[in-house]
Image (cartoon, rainbow, N blue to C red):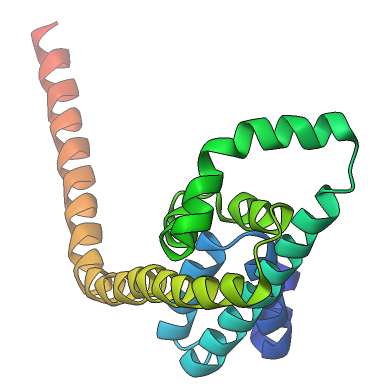
Length: 189
């Protein structure tokens, strides 16, 4: 299964872009890092993958926002429990939404904060004007990590051959010392 999926991804790249798009709706960091890493390695086109990532994140954020609106219609006890848990966040969300969205994207609670924005009925204009810049900063930060780690991996590949030779030399040396020790122990006994 694993190899079949990779085979189809290499032959039909739109499938890869589709997986990145869906992954950005539900996951985020790992998908973004991997997609930019693969773009740097030549598997994806960097501009295309960044457009797919941005579209996936923004559509995902809109879906999570509307999920928050739907959560207001949930069972009163569930709504009360969520409200009690998120109460400390509400003032930050109302006063500094950009900072709240940006920080939440980096500490892996972004979807919950966006859903909470929907629950408190943050106006769509305020939501989008805060979420889009926060998303762009997050994409640049995490995408840069993926891009530049790929560069360091390319440098590491050059030195990996020396490491392989060092390991081979160490293994041969170990086997040689072991053989000499066995012969010496036979003579002594």
